[in-house]
Amino acid sequence: MIDHDNLADYADPFLYDLENADEEPMASFLLKLAQQANGPILELGCGTGRYALHLARQGFPVTGLDIVPGMLAYAQQKAGDLPVHWIEADARHFQLPEKFAFIFEMGAVFQHLLTRSDQEAFLAGARNHLAENGRFLISALFTKPPYMVSSDEEEDWFEYDAGNGRFIKVSGITNYDAVNQVRHETAYRRWQGSAGDTITRTAPLALRSYFPQEMENLLHYNGFAIEERYGNWDFSPLMDESPMLIFLCTKRTLEGNQ
Image (cartoon, rainbow, N blue to C red; front, side, top):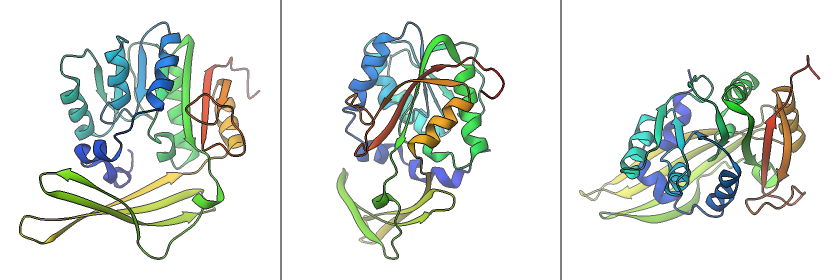
């Protein structure tokens, strides 16, 4: 089973949406690819449905899969009458009866997988559910030296008004494990309660770091051919200064380990 300690950051879907309110330019990027698909669409790790709902509003047949029940419940609430199919499942171990013309993951889903066995299970599930002429989109932050640092002291990150008298301040501590390529973050969300006391929610999070050649090897040896490499959500090519690693893939014919 997945390490639920690594899902604490998603315990409050309302706050998650407030902290991730900007869907662009990712939504426009996905819409263009969805328009090129000829069949149903699957989002792995759909969370509160921000991108699944965006595509469903444009008339695309969408399935959203996630392991966090609260996130899915909130997504379903937002969906209203939109015909989105919601699935509660682990993206490493799932079995659906249909194939999909376009499968994608957003929101650092792949970065939550810390070991090669988990990464390969995720990729196998995506490949097994991809239609023969379908396409698979996977992304991760492009790991750079500023990301590979540790902080001994708590640092202020951002703050926002959550309504109902809650003004939330978010701070955290980071530690980078270079051997395992994992960035450990501990986020603290604090606000003043109705009694004047300070309420604190602590959320640990571990995210795997990736490098371009590592991603290409993982995709190749797990049955994918890379069609395009992008460095950002504007379809720009992958370059040294790119902030993202974005790979658009198709199925590759498996012939031994070639």
